[in-house]
Image (cartoon, rainbow, N blue to C red; front, side):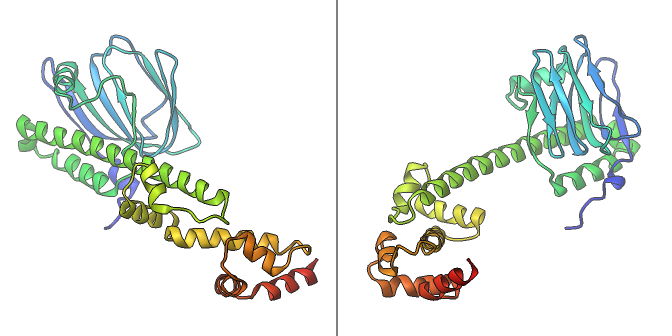
Amino acid sequence: MKQTKLEDVAIFNIGVTGKEDTYNLGFHTNKRLKSRKVQDDNPYFRFLYLIKGKGKLTTSSGQIYQIVPGTLVQRYPMRYEKIVRDFSESWCEFALTLPKSMYQALAELDIIEQDRWILNPGIDEALINYLRDLVKNLKSENFIRNHAAILSEILHIIDCFYRLDRMNSENSRTEEKIIQACEKMSRVPSRSTDVPKLAKQLGMSYENFRKQFRNITGMAPKVFLIRKRIEEAQLLLHDPGLTIGDISGKLGYPDIFSFSRQFKKYTGKNPSAYRKVFSRNV
């Protein structure tokens, strides 16, 4: 897929205005934007999807959030908050503004989450391309007059934001579990790890655990365990007081032959040759 150029998307800002229900959407760039405050009497709800740049959000309760590309800020009506951007970075955002009445209706239907300032849909090129094309299409007068079509597009945008946020949240939780697994598997490489049992402890099926482990680490759990055992063997081989047999036994190998064969497979040298090379370099 062709990636969107930031300078290409930051062109149009289309507004649709009614007497009581102003709403608009569009891209804004650094030339137009400075640090901004939203006062307590602000009647609108706004999504701010940051595509490029970084900054800081401070809420009325004193909470501070870092804003980076891929961050989605939910700016609520009738609440004070302030966004301070980093002027050392160029800035590009997509903003969608809804009237308070629409926000309240969508919040009651649980389409918009209340009291959650920050979401993390991440930088999604397909979404950015869709938003760019939508803003271009809104230049059409017929489209602007079709409020039902615009509302449908707004609901689709919101759904995309929340769906991507959920996906990233699930991916983050999965990554945390795999990190925990790596830490447990690294503690005592000489002991055999019951991988299916470990997966169950982490609340994952064995097959899903193996799949996610490979996706995140680039290797299967079995290979990870072997590499950790070989790394431990390399450290033990630096101790001249330990024989190859001692090290083989410490690491849980059934015999020296099995240890030597696996060590050579992963290092290119058998344990004795590795020890000699290390001794010459000391």
